[in-house]
Length: 337
Image (cartoon, rainbow, N blue to C red; front, side, top):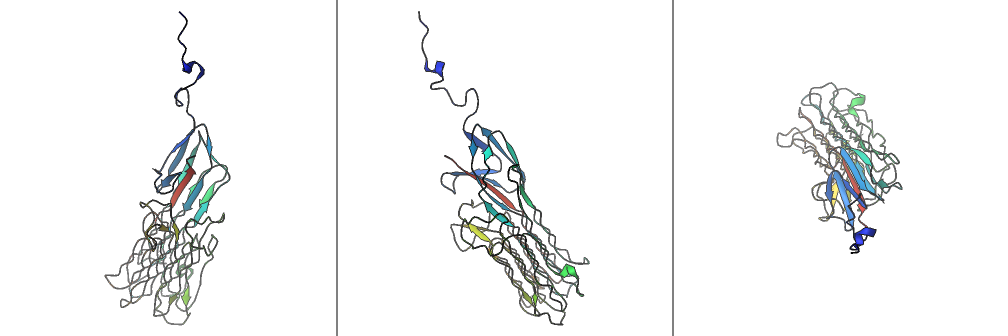
């Protein structure tokens, strides 16, 4: 009797997974396909790896944000307000290299900087940490946000905001205006949803103190955000507002911060500056998770930046600990077909 013919003799109808993987698949972070039709997202809110399997390559896009800077505070109760922390640099890129099945790519999500603790000699905040995407063909670094400047009785460099992806706002200058530090990203993001950035990303300056004046009492400046810079603090008046962050339609509701558009999530806002006076409120943080600035009032404490945004923390005064910056974010996206 002749042997029974089956299509599997010639690999017809065989399970594609038998005898080796085919196609493309990946694990790592939180996998999501609900917010961008026809695409798979891997959302990293902590460091990890993207592990690719199968036999194909994939084009991809990446959103990477550095850790936000912490806000500044005052050296001692009764002195002026500290500046808000700057947001981490935001990079949304479309690399020409591809994801290759069989490869593992490390992801480092930069942590946010801690807010300054009162009573220290400089009272400035702490800068965040860089976020890094480890594709060997095109590694990407999103620089951290700069620290918010501190407030001390005498002029010193620590009063100025720190440089970073977006710069921190300045604290009290005691008559000297240090102004803004240059940021590492390209200024003036258009603010449009899903706008692709240049290779060096988006970031802006923190505010300074104006006018220079000679009085000892100033309110802190706002930290810079992805879309625009923080505003200036003023002598014996208003503290500076944090710079606005960017909005994206594809981010899941579990990351980023809400904003004016209910269909978008916002990231990378600057921290608000603080008020030296307990009769005035601290300034708002920038849209995109920036922390609110504090004041001397017990009910107006500075806020930490919203988690998973890379935003800057709020500045503080009157012996309060400043707000901390938020950890950064990495989102890897590739088309399903």
